[in-house]
Length: 304
Image (cartoon, rainbow, N blue to C red; front, side, top):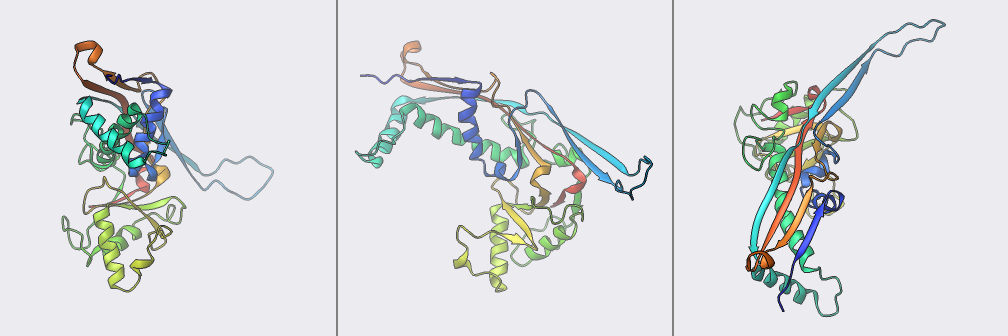
């Protein structure tokens, strides 16, 4: 008997699967995620100074309240792909055999296909968050993209120099000095905030671990799941999508990722082509949106 596949999700139903896919992009764990942006959203952040005064009987306005506003406009994206049902069935049947005869947690074929397919969405988001370019098909503008990225357009982020010269690659010998430079450049109004992070990719983090172990500051065999990486009291966020030889210091509440998971635009469809053209192919269709933006650029430090 032929296997028939049909799944059609839109709006909130599709959002459930798409949200699960996006959570696989590790960078989003270290950003502020806005899930219900219909078209664009104004990000407003307030900065107050000199407002507290000695009490008296008069009303005397003092101090300043500065409003910083930026716009997050996610880009609409889609995936259209086609697989041979037989190839997918082989992988699904292998999953069933690994689970064992007494295991009731084997996913339905449709769920198995969707779960494996959504990994591509997660990877695409991870790649674009930091270095994506909206001019490239299938990407959205990232934080660090030259000239057009969120940092460049904002224009107020704090640049720092590489300890050993512009464009020089990080090494275990210079990574500590580079971290010290970016930490020293963090504004005093931000330093010490609970959600302050220094962002780096895994290659840079390996160099850092190598450096501190050489200095005798770390016992690598004690770096278990409870270990929390820090530098001078600042937590380190290690993400896959960042380019090599760059560091960013920012609060998670100042770096935004936006999408829309509840509108009808969000779609995820599994279409069996047998009743339509007689083939054994399965088409997978996804529509979603994604984009990033910064809040206050002057509170973000970037080294490259």
